[in-house]
Image (cartoon, rainbow, N blue to C red; front, side, top):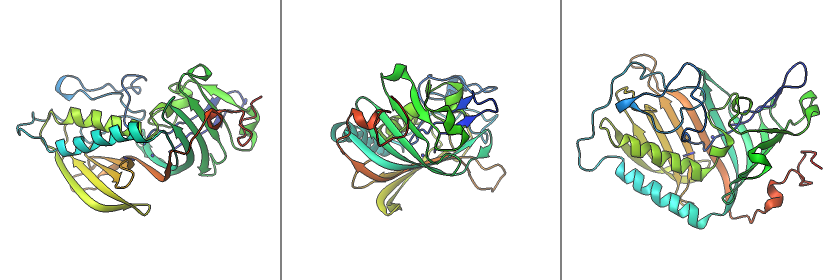
Length: 308
């Protein structure tokens, strides 16, 4: 289950700032906390999607398709994967108070696949808190972002890394505002392995109503040298019920958390390759660092927010 970044843009008059936010791990959609992208509506009735339609749109390979048939088997192929995910979620909530990692994300928005974006992250579970330092590409390198649930009027705080963009200084934006969501599929409030696990459970619970679902387990898969179990879920036939044609979740065998997630649309032509929609990877995860409020404070002297 596994990630990309925020982009700070200052218009020619120096007054317009847009921040593009990671999701998270990636993550899966929210429940109705942001508007449906322009010109698109969630499918209705049997084809209704779970949660928020991602910024950047729905899969296109199932456009105009009918509904999937109801599941016929007593035990759905997704049940073993759901059991793993639920146990993983309980373990995260019980055993992990915070973690640091390197997040890598790549997303397709409005038909265009962006480049890989890299960021160092500190994440605390309670209250949900995020600190991000952007490592690349050069267009976002040096940017920092902080979000703490219930603080700063519910806003995220950010600043550019260098150049003329940095002259604006620290800015404050609603996580789901148009500016904050520019160039991103999900808001910062969805970042992290717990959110990713919750959304995967949500979507799997939805999909197990229907047949036409293949689930395979691949042990001893590797992500950045970590031994994982890969769970691959595919919907062979395009149906308007489904968010993806193919998805892979990589569960770290030692940490029992999702550290990579990738999702694909149906091929654009018969016999073609699946089309990557989004991928998120959590690398170099270090749990229970003992993070405090200072780690998510723009006044931290180790950061460059310039807050007084």
